[in-house]
Image 1 (cartoon, rainbow, N blue to C red):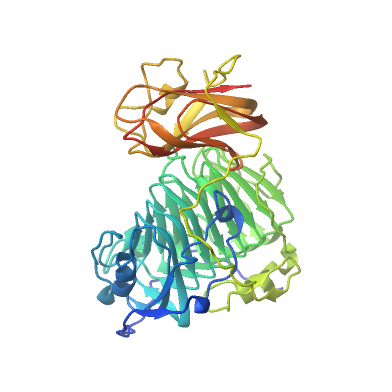
Image 2: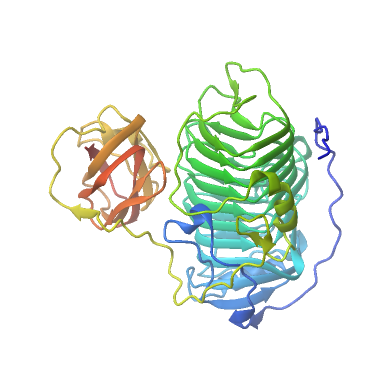
Length: 521
């Protein structure tokens, strides 16, 4: 195989396409014609699954305004819908549309405070030209077979903070598949990330997609203290001519398998601030420092297996620069809760070249290194917002557990918190202090420096504006659901060794106050 030297800097911004979008109307399409591949893979298949608009109406849109109109025309913000997109979406044809089932804005595709939506490119293709896709406070979203290019955060025009696809603020269950995300330079040319997640975004899969020509591939977490994101799967993607962040992980768990990384110019998978990355059967080519903890002394972790390193160079280790190479070995064990089949790393460049990106016919691989058409999408009988199912042996009770409260002296983090509250208040043994989410839902975690075995938890509320009416208990290492319930109290489950356990509030009457999140062996 020929070896090419990586470029030291990205090329100057290319001229944007000057293609006028066709003016069209929204047409109702028979459901059977929706070009959506078989079910979500990876972490997007967990937490109740990701079905998008399955079972709902299918409409056609040729402008950004029509996409917004389709969202606003639904009976509610959770009514399932599949929007088939054809043509070029740009600033000139993307206006704000108002309605009770949407919250849109001009110059960006706004998927905000909604659920159960599929956005899929059809026909001659869908190109979002300098218009980003913004997902905020939303769940159960599928984006498939689209191209998003040249989205800027500075210069003109700007959109979505410079992210091709950006997710933030309590986002759950997103599957981006067979899509192409491109820039034409780095931050100095006005671009930011291609695929960013922050502020409590979880259960996301990026599959069979192309990310290229950008200073930043993408991040999970906006800072070293913003650690509420995770459970992300990246598989069968091409990262090409990317300076760094392929991706950058701040906390959380991510799984990268069967990806082709080519021309990572400065660094690649950057696991830091306690993040855990499972990295297997990937092909790294003509790149530098493809795995490690970079630009910080806040260590991250990785498990590696079956990867190929072809013409990869490694820098010396330093105080804030810790490459995994030149002979990458695992420094942690990372488990995932779903089944998957690996292609051999040796065939990854060929398989990814034939399957990844928009306009490839939604071809997939079954582990035999042979691209094939996906199975038909199952017919959906209902499309509720995804909910998790508790372990059959888990129970929620009101009787307090006995023994030592293991939360005392542990660490903690969580989603956005209300002003004046602290994550640490849930593990201080003091019922007069508390943590509250920034709203009626959110999550708080207790964590330890090494795996700790627990079999029950007790959540105690302080009197306040609201009380918990629905919750889930999650294994913070794997994303597995340990228990679910209504009112806060005690939950017991099979003894589980973990480094982090998360209490996620899914419903409340007002803003709840969690005084103590107790854990017991």
